[in-house]
Length: 246
Image 1 (cartoon, rainbow, N blue to C red):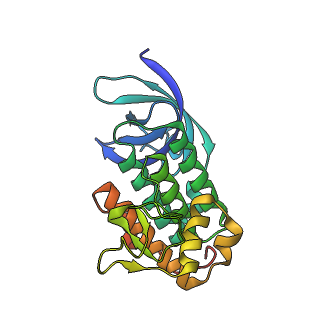
Image 2: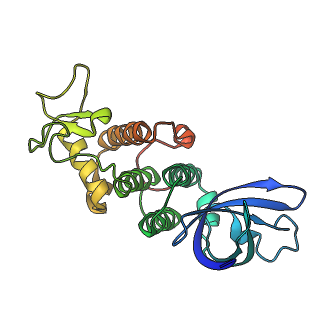
């Protein structure tokens, strides 16, 4: 059908002409969608603010040849304002939507959409450290895409852990017999934190020491970028300090 409705989260936008924008969105049922929002840069626009990055909306679109056209937009989650006023939330959110954009090049799933919306909502509420919210999102998004890291058994031989080495290229933690020379050795508390992040055990995540949080973040970033086969530019701007949103 030429016209359809869906729930979307806005990933990014860029200008088109004098008053329009091209909006890239992750939808619940139609995967990643690129559409033209006509006239949204005018002050008289009815839905310009609803199509900013990190916003969640119910949109009606007309199916075009190359780009769809946004006909209506109703706000479902106005997370952008609470995120944009805090640097650490803002940079973490950018890394999340950039990852979602890369992961869903071919075909997205409703679970990817719901995961991203939940992560942005958590960021906007400020109850947990933004970097931890980002790390949890990255691990879960990779798992949904079929790249779940091995955290309980050796990624190469399957020996039950816990193990003390982490190799992104091999798929997660590895035992001493499988660890290549120069592998990153992790402390037990870092391994426990990685398992808590992917499971969403926030009491344990929030109580983790700053050293363990920083170590886990580095491993998550390396693992994600290795399997995406390209860097996530926004990660270089993310605040690496632990602690609640400032």
